[in-house]
Length: 399
Length: 199
Image (cartoon, rainbow over all chains, first blue to last red; front, side):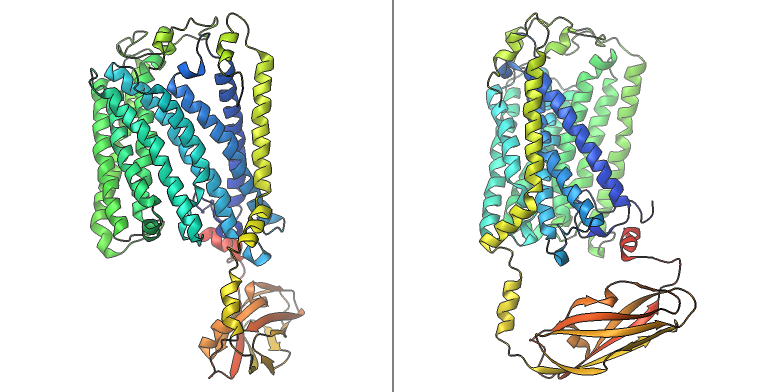
């Protein structure tokens, strides 16, 4: 590609994204295609959820995973067109003589940041909400209790989805927004901690006096709970404008979003993978390897990312190719952790491959505490399940 | 959202999924998408209106306030031109003139390509005294980008600038000097691709 690949990072900030070579045009094209597929997928999911539920399955009896996907679907159809509009304006700035984001032509590059983050912040919750849904299934199953506070969970999901559209400028505290704006975005951002706190409280309370067992899905769910709470706490620190101006664009931010995203998205994806793997393949996975995978991930993840809090507080900027001498020791620790974390992920390939090839047969419901319609069909699920709408037992709800 | 939320699930018992229900939901969702697209396309205008209404982004204001307190004074401007062994004959139309600070100055440089081949050149500015450079605000300049000269081409090229009123009092003469360097063929062709290849 002449001029190299798109080198703007995922934020695509102008002026760089306006000046770059044609790699940027390819990236814009890719974003458009991605946006269309996300929107069409979301229409499908929302319509299915609203119109095709089993008899007796009212919205407030739905599995929480479906609820998180319903809200995620709405977030996607509302926010993806915003990104599509932003990259289209970039494209016309690049090739058709407009200057939406060019100060020389009367535009403003900061406008792009506003539009981008109006999409970008809901996007964070698009990634996180389905993860919350998975956790809300795994923790009750391995606590042998129903989920605590189902209704408050649903309202918390909806509240997080809604508020995510009104906090975008907390990514932009140093762009010169006025004090009133900084205060508003600070308080609005802190407000998100309330529904998130409700969820963490409900998960913890679900385990309270439960009959807990610690198979791999549960381990990943607990790992999620610990790491996500740490990430949420540093998020609150960053929400404070006065602090954020000091640590903006440092490794503190990098540490924060890895605690939220790796824990929030990756660990819960693994929890879901191990939870439903017997259903998908019809075989039990290798529990020993699964547990090894969890412990290696948990230990190396913390070795990789915990020191980055210290690096950021000491002033090491992100998105630079090199760093000052005094940061070398912590960076070495972080590098060791990163390699260990990376190699540990190879285990999941082994586990999945083994389960696909064979192993102990999984019953229709391999987890005795699990609830939900998917456990009423054989493992692996046959083609064309539920050709007749299944009978839904309302006492099975809220699990 | 959809008013008949709760009864949808019960409504389909034993029957085929309702096609009209699907269509209604899809139509509603498409409305959201179109609304989102309209919302983002209105953003440049809304943003500008909002900033003007609140006065948030009047980045010139501090500049205007600072400038208005400094009186206008005449300054001698000298123009200089150099070529760097590339066959470009390069000189200013006027060697010297007197202009007031805060006034928009238009000057023209003349370039002649004395070679029988295409020459790509980039002009690099310098200022005398050096610290006066910060007070020369260029609105347009041929030095902003590379210039391609056809064989034997003669071209007149503009520089438009304003001298900041805050120019230190001890500076009574400002010299603008440009040197044309040849951009070797086959190297970087434009600033755009240069930015791309660095990343």
